[in-house]
Amino acid sequence: MRFGARVFKTGVTVILTLFITNLLGLEPSLIAAIAAVFALQPNVHRSVMRTWEQFQGNALGAVSAITMVLLFGNNVIVIGLTVILVLAILLFFNLQSVSTLAVVTMIAIMDAPTLMENSTTMDFLEAAGIRFSLVMIGVLSSLVVNLLFIPPKYETKMYHNCFNITSDIFKWIRLELNAVSEYQVVKKDIESLRTRVVTLETMYLWYREEKNYFKRSSFADARRKILFRHLIASTRRAFELLRKLNRYENDYNHLDDDFKYRIRHEMDQLMAYHEQIFMKITEKIRPEAAFETYDNDEQFEHSMMDDFVRLYYEADTLEEKIQYENILEFISSIHEYSNSLDRLDRLASSFFRFHADKNKINIQDETLDI
Image (tube, rainbow, N blue to C red; front, side):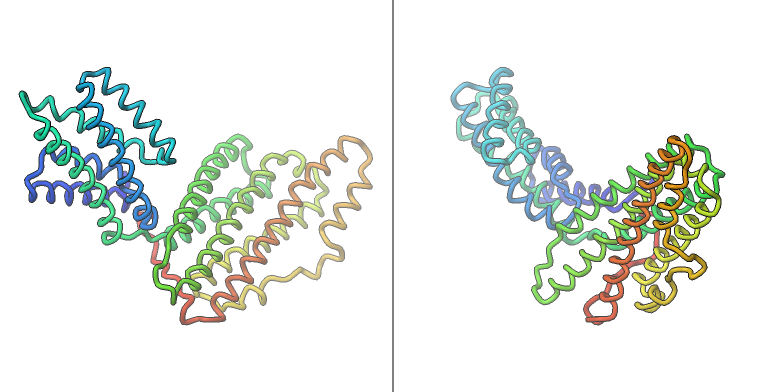
């Protein structure tokens, strides 16, 4: 069982909401607590933008509820028709993202008359205003908590997740290249890795949405976002490489031994290159270190593609040619992965060599929350 920052923020938001409603003497406070849970967003920028949308959606829901109750009462059929009306209005104004809370607001207001027998119109309007205020207290509480309490540490999370996912990918690549893995076992773990990579890419989208409201540091933030975009892209390339290797495992195992050695050597170089880039991003090695340590081994007379073309034309049967054609997809993935690492390395080197005082990445040690 793991408790992340979002879990704690949800609890703190509910506590703050209930404290405010009890302080103001507003009832039922349950409405505000529900609104706070629905309104909590994964990042600060989305909270700021969504608060305005929540206000508009809740206002539309409240106005619709008040109008329908005054005209037709609050029986179950009217409530159901009002839900349809509110959803249609939200779609028209492109506010469907806040439809859930708007419907909660509407139902809370339409249910208000049932709590008061022989109530007047003013009593109902007062109850509707209180319930609308309760919803907005929950929304504003979630915004305050997101702004002030445990702000998301996306850079730390993305770095450690990239490192952990890539390490798992390298483990399976090495086992596949040495032909000591089970196809079905690797395939099952690849699906788990795919989910982790997609989650990582989603986290980057949240990180990219974050805005810096101080113009002086906006360029530094943009440089960091570009660096992390390519860091995650290199993780995706490594995953695609593993997927292709697993798919064409049988074809790889039937390759010429010398050519298999050439592929293993190339992959060892690329994985070492990738690991050093991780070290560079945490500033544990010099910015130019990767250029010094990663080079083509002079023991090979020709490039890997030249060797592939020679072996392809030397194949005697159609089946052998098809095997080499399948391996070509894997070699293409190696080339794309290599290019991705070159781009990432150039970005990392430039990032830490120039504007060093502004280009700082606060990557904290890994914790159980990552």
